[in-house]
Length: 335
Image (cartoon, rainbow, N blue to C red; front, side, top):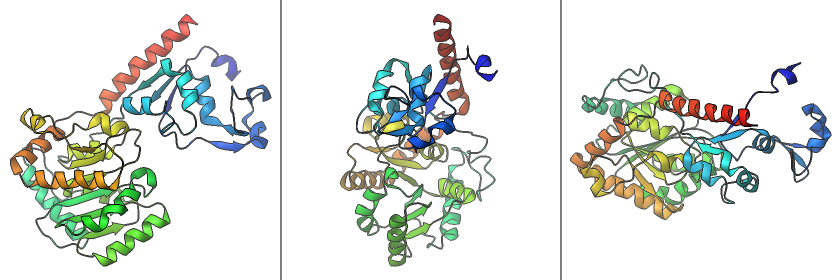
């Protein structure tokens, strides 16, 4: 009955993160309720296992990824996680649409989680949020750059290269606040550094929505050194909160950040700092550049303004999805 109901329906399959594929042993195939003829190399079979993500890619009418750059990256061996060939076969049907932000939840002008609401016109109130964040983390309430991270502690999120440079970073006159949990090896190393630098590093191994809002509002710089990032949302939150991102040029980070260049400052286009090569050395250089520009309050204010005035709303993303749904419908009609 249901099969007949959906017979003429078009399908758009959105790919978020190719690193998570739904792999199961072949013995569990009967649980899918599918015909055994689908368990082939041209179907759901993947090196002797069931791959549900592969099935979605093959049998959907069209595919979307959560950013234009990621839609291209996943068709390469470096980012395809073994499905790059399958995706290249569907290249004509793959589109990239950026994620959107719910500005009713992420807007410092109305945010109930922060101590002082603000907009670009009242950006000086952000200082109160910074002091509140420092107090919350038991850090000295000093007027120095505060760097924030809200992330899963995983190699994908760049914690391997962060740990390469963290000792050098903590020699600087800065404070670093990290919120998140993940791989024990990263948790343990970060806790050790927090014990060594209690006045500079605050490591908080938990998920806390209120705390995450406090970091976005109170930090000056937001770090996103992700090895790969399908889209990323924290850089979009950071724009709205006047917190400048430093990020690896990959996926949605490449699509949403306009890198710092003096000419971009003049035209008020720059929204953050990108590093091209995934390494601790390049990451550190980008952080140091951001800290240098931070000292020039005029330039820094231009970067903050460009970010706060950008639009990455859900409405914008929804409009792009509506266009894509129409493409799916047109394709179904032709077939």
